[in-house]
Length: 149
Image (cartoon, rainbow, N blue to C red; front, side, top):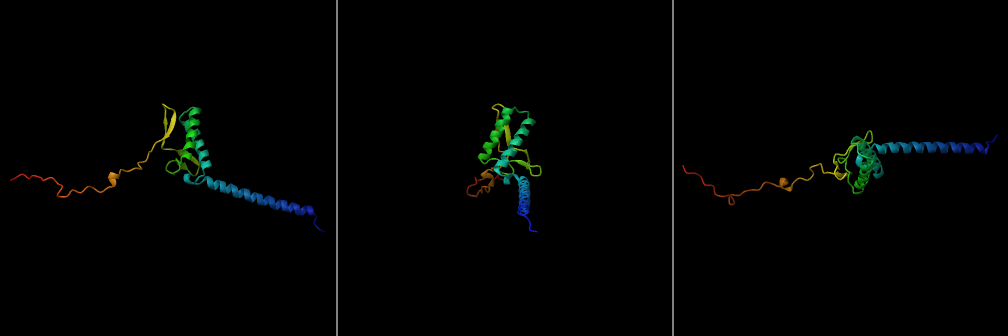
């Protein structure tokens, strides 16, 4: 007997379902792999999500009202737009858990209820320290009087 047309469409549907499952698995593995990247490799939207989660956690730890937590989230968004918090040393990020542990430069001004980023590193070294010492030639030295014996 010849197979009816009904069975061929069911096998085609089955292979399409298998292909869709394979694509879904591939996308899930890619998503998990992207979440395990270091901070500087993450996408801007993922960074925003992680910073918002950190703002919630930070607000609960320091007992800030919801208004301050909301301003912290807005501050984080503006920092990302201004290309702050991009480097790995700006944010202490745990790759395994995918959470921000801390932001060392983050400070809260309790008078104004505003958040700021302070420069913690001593990135800028004085140029005078990197110059060679000044040489004093014999011409420029003041004559030293020696006591007579």
